[in-house]
Image (cartoon, rainbow, N blue to C red):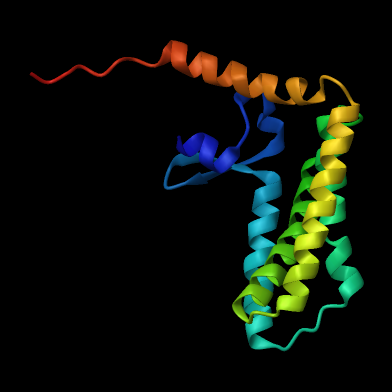
Length: 161
């Protein structure tokens, strides 16, 4: 559970993760999520310390690199790299921090714009995935293999009578 929770990737995709040692245990972290949550936390701290006014165009563009990186990798146009995943995840993390900031301060106008933006991004990604037949199946196959292997190797617990 913890492996999938932190890495989000089956063993065949460990090149998409960061592996760190903590208290003698190897922890596998999703590279994009590491960039995302690191920058989200940093931006939230900075925005509490300093008044930051984000330009609207910046807010709209921040999710684009992560979306394009994930989408082009998913439809197998290219394979992303660790630095690109960290960078695009970081930009997306800033966007998430902006969203959290406006949720906390309840700016309904900005929140509505973020909602519309999210819908546009999601619809665009879905249209590309639908247009590229089989891409969703190809994307999910390593995860299905991982689950099947896990279920095959799991040992049943002895029942206590």
